[in-house]
Length: 527
Ligand SMILES: Cc1cc2nc3c(=O)[nH]c(=O)nc-3n(C[C@H](O)[C@H](O)[C@H](O)COP(=O)(O)OP(=O)(O)OC[C@H]3O[C@@H](n4cnc5c(N)ncnc54)[C@H](O)[C@@H]3O)c2cc1C
Picture 1 (cartoon, rainbow, N blue to C red):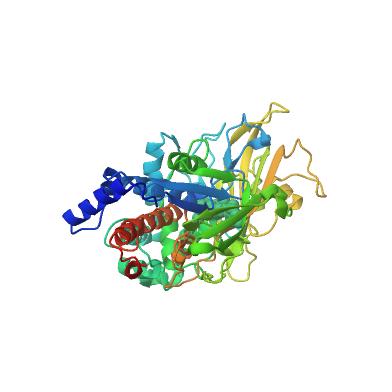
Picture 2: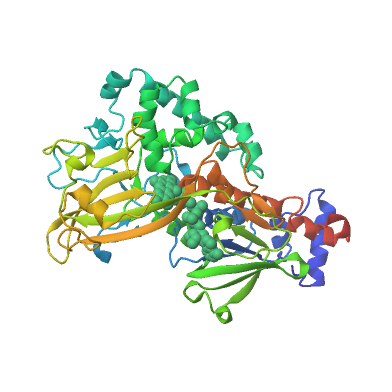
């Protein structure tokens, strides 16, 4: 805060005498003085951190507050769990999503950002060469395919109604009611929410969160057959969890597929657009090691290059008024001051994502189909019939056809989700390739890329959630993930934290008020 001259002070005290209200920042600016520029660090450049940066800049600008934002990420890229890789590691090949792959029409932050940054969306069904008679979707229980959908709509309702009666309609109704309740979180009186637990209670979603998916669906009159064959296939591909584990709300999120889309070139482009628009200083490939409390209660962030993690001499420090932790604390490895609340460590799914290309189609007999049958392009899974072996994967999807740059031949790009590493025996089995050993010839599998994620929490039923605030000036987004874990909900939490921070600057405990107090020589009563 600068009091640049006595004339400024006079001008400000004149304004004070004229007004009963605290000074606004415009008043201060007109009087020729400015409050100190706010310094904010955001740790994590995924959906939550990027959205926090974008909205912080926007909300601060709306209140004429100057803010410097620094966004740190240990990865060398923006997007966190939204990231892509190029087949054959060749930038000339269109990228494939390695993490979060779809969002939906009701995801208003992502949809608005898509428009603002002029990004084009991809249809979820990319045409394949010779794909005429390949069914779009099948559900496999480890022994046989229990459901096949031939058309390009997941909700091929006519067939579903024939097989499952009213369950599909009831599910859609339940899903829409649930989405309606969730959407209250974007506006007053719920938004912004300092306390996620209270916000959830206000939405009326607590009952849905308190029970597992199978209990919730049972109460809603959804038949066990439809839940098992269709809804559980969706909870397994989206969250790697069965209906007797995942809570009712996340179960409904899995069924909210209206207007599914992804960004051409990668969903991470939304978050890159947000960071760009925020004007934040980008400290990418930079791992935060410690956050310490220093003089006057400010926070010091110590960080260094991720690549030279073990060389403390390369670290540097910077001082901030606020820090936003936009990542699950349990995976950050950051040392925190003693006054910071530590969120409970919660179980996360360890998801193995394997992308590979091959000239081979999937082998029908590996999935209980006849030799001449076509394997659906998206093969989801569900639990087995009693006493039978379950599937050893969560999903196998045929993504698109790509040209192998070495052979010039056309290959299929596949994505597999599993809870265990995918080995050569598994790949040979699903492609019907002969041989043994860990090496598969390049002519059989042209390219392979493996990634293990802490993908999302085990979404166990719960009705209380971690606070958005871990200390007076330290904010937290990842409590949201036990409620719903998606790009949109992380973005919502980033926006929420940004609103809370700026409201505090504007409001009672904010800089404007402190400045007001200083001028009235009653700083002590305003501390
Ligand atoms: C395989 C997979 C599929 C998914 N599918 C979907 C989907 O289809 N649709 C959907 O909406 N969601 C999906 N999700 C979930 C979605 O990706 C996440 O909910 C969301 O992206 C989380 O964003 P975030 O910003 O909260 O966290 P993250 O994206 O994890 O960002 C946190 C960032 O913090 C950084 N960080 C951590 N510690 C430090 C440190 N010490 N110093 C500096 N930086 C640090 C990390 O590097 C990371 O980039 C999927 C997730 C996975 C893994």
